[in-house]
Image (tube, rainbow, N blue to C red):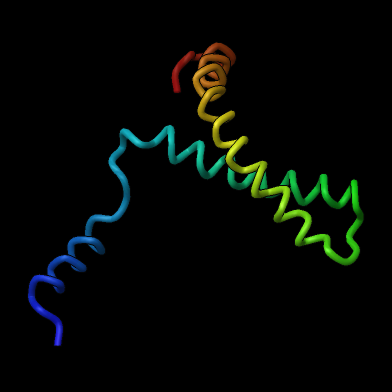
Length: 94
């Protein structure tokens, strides 16, 4: 039998999910770097080694290095990219 305290805790978690808005740049960097590093490691591993035996293992090994590097790079480059986008878009507004 669940206690009322644990039930209310889980209810709050379900009702209020997500991080505060101030974490948007970090969450963006995490998702962007995760997806891009994964796709790039698949493509580069396929080009360098082919799609034979051990392909997925080699790609995941490369991803383990690529993802943290990509995450740091996106965090560093994001402000510059945002300025370039603002400069490029006609209104200058995002």
